[in-house]
Image (cartoon, rainbow, N blue to C red; front, side, top):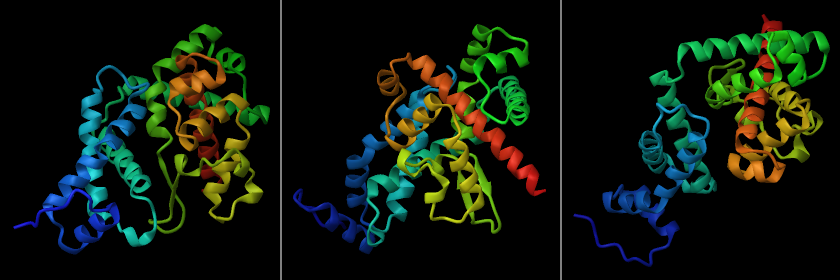
Length: 262
């Protein structure tokens, strides 16, 4: 039988006790304390999702991530639990979305087609292509291209969390993991020698200014798309489009890089 837990116990004491005896009462308190993190992560991921993806479902997937984080967290590692838990919650939601294959095949196919056009165009130009150039290559008007970007916006959320492997199976890096502070976007300052991460960071540095800002503000500064829109003085829909195009450019760069290794 669990001992009664005084309400004034510090967080450090709770973690020490839980690591020692896995007391269900302590776990329940930790779950209640950190439950808002699940809604926070689900809320960020919900932006741009199609109507068939319910916010409550995302929260449900995220709860499993929180429970997993509580079981595996080691306070001795000196990493804040909030930071660790957000990563686990985020990963759990993304993994579940992947398993459900929630993106319609037609949308995914279209996203790949446009990505291929962007890759070919930017390889030939030797620089990021403008919206007008991409639209022209696709045989669309700029307005039609904007609508296409809005349709495929949801696919970019998973794309940014794609894992790219190098060498050993456990040697992996995702695009999202590689987004750093604007001050460290220069590849010369990267301490890690992981070639994939170098290519990702270099590619982020070559993005058009607004697209780069969207990625940094969303993944590094942790702002919502609405807040980013206020910072950049554009609509939330426009931020979503910028995010999608940025991810598309990064994926095309990585695809070219991986082909070069073969």
